[in-house]
Length: 313
Image: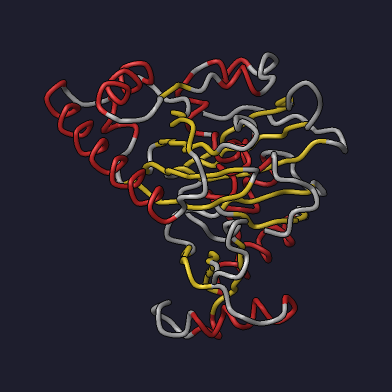
């Protein structure tokens, strides 16, 4: 299915993410009291060739538009490493060397960025942690060339964990962190954030189909497996980041959200709430986004569009 993608105002941010063979496109204007979704579209993409992306950009009228692209799982690696004890200007190069033996391919073939994880303010001298993001140069180059040849301006190549961090920032309470859990057709993502910063993230190999499209017995098995993974993640986070208090687990929109929320409430030792997207974003003008399935599919694109303008990671 395809929807027309309306031209956006200069103040809007356009973001694309991919779920299976579908690319989700949104444009969001960051305004008070809450961000407003200006446009939404989806487009089939059965291959990731420059020609296919060029056709998509033309179909969605994105020529000369500034775009944020969210990488898909398998196109990058997110690795937690110890912060190198070097000046800020040398940090990225030091992180590159830390990845030499863990990438599975030569590090000189990788585009690498670093994401700082805030340290415990009570122990400023303690060695810290950070995330390293690595993607093959050929993947990054292919996207840059595809968008350039189609006349679109690829401003940022982002990752799902940071897109979800941006969504979590709309939900956080001062001085407390949250765990945010989202699902789409490709799987799940659990993030732990506080103060607008990403502390921890992990992928969960459970899709929306497994959570809502199976019979009752199969769903119960999947629910039990999910609870086990979530409890382990919550326990591990508490041990590793004891200085961050997680106030709640927020379940992002998805089909069958109420059933899963009730199960998690009964089986997890943490407050569980469901996110109503309309409470944190103005989606009134987008009819398609009234459906939980569409909200689930474009959740990461919406998060990417909320990326702070000055952010470098």
